[in-house]
Length: 333
Image (spheres, rainbow, N blue to C red):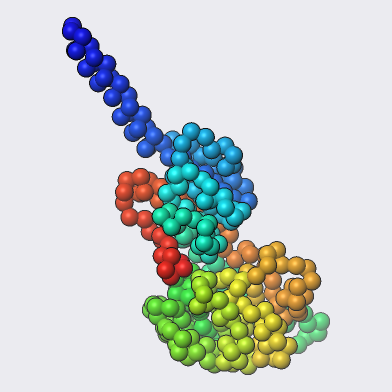
């Protein structure tokens, strides 16, 4: 065998090894989980879905190259931007406004919202539970110490307005309509929802909330929706109305809600999200007798279901396929 034949053979074998290594690297995704909850439990669930993946749970463990995929809850500022080679951020939450803060996620890096049927089901349960509890006076009966019958109203005689017509809001609106409520739904686009009357735009928001007996907020947080639950909206509602909010804390003007409750314009409120979390023990919302406070539990992330969805998105990204629920930064969601 000639020198050139040996050289070519050596080069071919080496080239083949390089190609195989690159293929292995491509098919072995490196994933970093940034969660203040239980990242190891998430890693265990994700490993069942992508057994070939290298999964890290601490940025300090990053060595030997880029980490294309980051599963992110609400990490401390600057951590995501410091991860080398990030290509896709997979949010553990439906809300992603914390990821849109300038400098947190580089512009070229995609962000995927978590849209999970399990989360949608949980959110619907919470919203309908709070709505029906108010509708049938259950908190009042629980507080009564004597046999005191309240005035009961049929669902068909109540107007319920759902703010938000995305995956969460549309399901809540459909279920409210199926129960029998006169249901309205408002969104930026005016998306239609079966059984509900749809509204869009600023004038549509006024129309959708005027005379509403109950308002359920499931909007994304954008500059346009911040402070949407304010004295003007409460004042347009039917007297003695109810507000349920599981959107984001900054949607609500806290002082305006307290004032509306104290004046009798609103009867009660149920809140799951707050500007400051955990909500301080002495916060006016926490101590008000007509406010139900739950500790951000309306739609908890279901690890197994969420990791299954994220694994599919990682595979699609590796294969160059379109990914659902990519965030449009211009819209803020």
